[in-house]
Length: 149
Image (tube, rainbow, N blue to C red):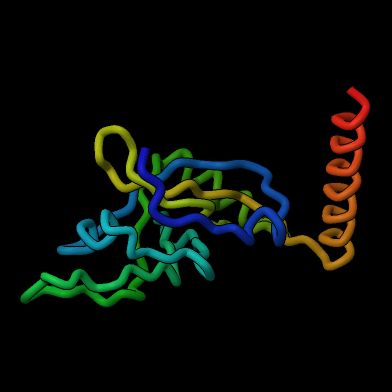
């Protein structure tokens, strides 16, 4: 598995409830560009529209050797999921405060481009501070345990 892009801020800014693996419908030279690692999901999000899931703000830089057809780097990309998964996600996203965010983009063992999509709830500022404080205390406890072994 070759990881192309990771959304590092996702676990800090959101509470991850469920994860899904989805294929990405890519055009032309986008696959070659992704294989070079030229993708960014920093501000990306997904929406369910008309029974389809679309990924927005997923930037794929144009492939250098592409000649004729160069797709728009910021165009919405269609995600490939089973119909029952899309219906489930549509129901969940309609709930207050839930959103779909990509966690990482990668190539699986078969060479297919995949995105790990998460159903998440946004965290408040005080929740983020609480999580940081808890992690810091856990690290200190680990260090203390190592010292006294």
